Image (cartoon, rainbow, N blue to C red; front, side, top):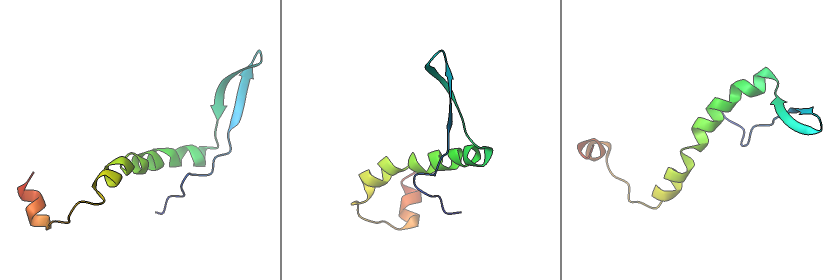
Length: 64
């Protein structure tokens, strides 16, 4: 499944005595968040390694 970056969110802000207390998201948007977060956590590793020389899969597993 393709993930839209960033996902479109439609939050409702809950306030109590004029202070922001919480957020309500539609369930469909909430359910997409873990997948989005899983994808973006890999971005720093990708950036760090994108200029490295490619190696064979066999060599990669020998180095594990």
